[in-house]
Every structure is written in C-alpha cells, then in structure tokens.
Length: 599
Image (cartoon, rainbow, N blue to C red):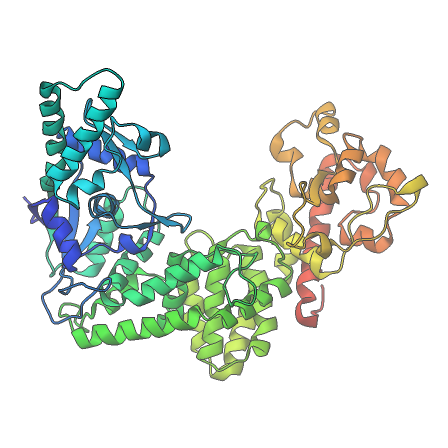
C-alpha cells in the first residue's frame, strides 16, 4: 500500500471554533465574500441535527516556528493550521454560532440568521414572518452566546403565552419535549468533524495540487485562492487591500473620491493578485510562486523564515503598486485609446489585467511615464485583445512575454520588445489571411467582432444611415464613438447589430443554419429604430433606398463591398470578411497617430 500524505483526525466543532477565535486555525473566508447562499447553511445545520455526515475537512499543518500572529485584531497565537477544504462550511457555522458578520458576494455585510422550530425540528432562514411566529426560536445564535437555559426558558414562556392567548395551553409533557429538542440543538457545538491533516513537510506545490483536486471543477483561479489563504496568514492587510479594491471597483464612485470604479472591468481580488504576482515575480504561473512564498530554500526542502518574509515583502510592494488608483486609471485610458469604450466589448477580463501588469512593469521597473506608455500599451492591448493572446491557458504565454520584455536593456528596450511582439503577431499575412479566416464565426462575443467595434471608434466612422429622416432626407450624422459612450443608458441599447441579409430572406433562399445566418460578416451596427425599419427586406430592395445617404467613406468604414447587395450570399460573406479585416487594420494603425505601410 502506498504511503499516504495525510493522517485522519477528528475534532469537535467547539474546538474548531475556539481555534479560529485564537487564530491557531486560519479561516480567511471570514474576510472574503461568502459565496454560499444562506439556505446552504440552514441545510448544513439540519443535516448535523439529524446526525448525518457533513463531509471531511482538510487541514494543512504549518511548521512550528516564530512566524507572526495572523488574523483580525485580538488573535492570541500564530496560525499553525490552514483550512484547505471546508472553508465555506466552517465560515457558515462560525458566523451562526458566534454571531459575526460575513461579507456576501455583492460585498454587502450582514449576519447569517437561522431560525428553528422545535415542534418539528425545522430550520429556516430568518425573515420577518418567522420572527413574529412564536413557534420559532427566531435566532439560534443566542443559544451559544448567552446562558442557553435562559434562552430556552424565554422561548418556552413566549410560546406558552401565545398558546394561552389562542386557547391552546402548552402541556408539561410538550414543554419537556421542546426543552429537550432545544438542548439537542445547543449540543451541536460538540458535533464531531472528521478531518484529514497534511503535515508541514509536504511541499506547497503538492498541497496546491491536492487543493485543486479536492475542489471539483476548480479553475486556475483556485491557485490564487490558495495564495490568498497564505496571505491571510502572513500578510492579512494585503489581502484586505485586494478585497477593498475589488469591492470599490464594483460600486459606483462617490463624488470627489478616488476610486477604482470604472465602466470597463470589475476585477476580482484573485485577478488583482495575479497582476501583483506577475509584476513582482515576472511569473504568470501562480503555482510556481508558492515555493517562494513559503520560504523554500534553493534545495527546495528546507524552510527559511527570513526568505519567506522577503518574498512576502516583494508581493506586498507589488500589491501596493497594483492598487494605486492613479496608475489604474491611467492604464484604463490606454484601453479607451485603443478604441474599447464599453465593458460589453471586453471579451476577456484576464487580458485587461495581464496587460495592466505589463504596464506596471514599464512604469516601476523601467521608470517610464504614463505618457511614455500610453501608445505602446494601447497598441499592445489591441493586439492581445484581437488575437485572444491571454485567453484560455494563458499562464505560459504571459510568463514568456513578461520575461522576454524584462530582459531588454533599459526603458527603450522594454518598449521595443513589446513593439516587436506586436509586429511579429500582426504580420501582413495575419491581416490578409488569418484575420479574415477568424472572422468566419457567428460567436456573439468574438474578439474579432469587438476589435471591429473598436476600429469603428478609432477611425471616426459615423453611424451607418440605414434610415431616412423627414421627407426622405438624410439623418443627422452621429459618430459611432458617441453611441458607444457608456454614459448612455437608455431603455433600448443605442446600437444594435442588424443582419444585412435578413434571416427570413435567407431562409427563403435555403440558408437556415444559425452559424451561417449570424456570421460576423452579415452583421452591421445600426441604431435600433433603423433595425426596426429595415426589418426583413432583402438588401437588393432596401439598399437603393439608403445608398444615396452613404458616402464612399461610409461604405469603406462599414466594410460594404462594392455591389454587395446583389452578390450571392457566400460571395458577400467572403468579400466582407476581407473588408472588415481591412477596417480593423486601419483602426489599429490609427492608435497614437501611428501609421504603418499597408500591403
């Protein structure tokens, strides 16, 4: 039988709660958004009351050393155990039994208040109706935070008075049964929890692998979750900074208040941690940073507390730089300068944040000013967004890029390395062969589609006049960028994507596959009233009516091939894909006033 990396242990819940209070057991979820709905806490308590098993905890025991205290104020000892699996269960139970507040997914704070009806041992999430019902102990937290017999007698007195008022007196036998049931509820504090304990000699990479495997369906962000757990032990204030930044970014900014709030991206704490790790360590693989943060020696076996403190210092400095609101908003200006005006045209938040890390490396490692970085970063962001460079399994790519760039000599070398990457990615063959092929998609969130929208903003294209004004006159010209303005929040979106060859018309000529009908090349941005006006009319019928309002530049901007309305559908798609690719290229080449020679 192979040697196991763990040993089974058992705890009473009261011991776990006491260890959390002392700080011996690190439960960072108390300071993080609590993702369980309250009904899951209710169901957990119900299972415990019925004596059902409720899963095994997994705990990693740290090496005994002189590491500093952790956790919120008042912790008495240094953490010696990290909860690897079971954080949500313990958070819910701690919140109920200790009466503390938790931060929910929407960053609101509050208690988890559970009610209990001893007559039939029914648990409920407390609400106003339950609070008025004398059959319920409306807040079971009181059982463990006051003399429980007083809480029980107070409940029985209230119930007895309500029953007498209703002419249904509570018999002594019934009182005894209710008292026994509530006493059983109180005794949940001693519920036995099975756990597996991983010893300190097991390396952090192995623990990270275990962590990923026991969290079914875990994503790469689970590794960030693991580092956040370590931050709670060694640098809790940094973890709180990450969470406060994410919370502020998700809320509307107050007047005259510096805030990360914006209309493009709402980063999570995990994602901002990734920014700091990439900036501080030039590594995109979070797992490769775990050994550094644990203070592993060069041999990888011994733990060096001084080295660990040094690495957490590097991370702490990187977190501070990453959360600087001036740098954050100067970087967001780069995205706007790249033509991306709305969150709906951002296909990958990871792309936004990883390029932000490159921005910060240029700013702090190479002392480049915000002005120095504006155009190079805008162009780099457009390239990475268009090509999906940092989507999917991006860790290897971003690590390779970051390390290539930082090996350059001086600030000029850093910018040149980025520019070289852009040029070797967006080659003439990319524009004329690869990009038209990538446009052969019907995906509503295609990076190429969003790059096309950005290009329309960059080139100053006006909204296509697919509708006439009063008495057949052309409507007033509106730049596309104005209708992409995030300040506009009408009931209907100001711009819609319209089928140039309408669906019903295509069905009549035998084109009924959604993938062919909804091709990016068959869609054009129009104002929503125009979309209604065009309806299902075929292009050879409606185009002559509107073509007089289109200038030659309008036709080029919106990638309408010459004679497009009379083309066969597949020929039209092929021609328009090439025309859209040309618009995207032209938009990219306008960034920062930069021009390249088109071939």
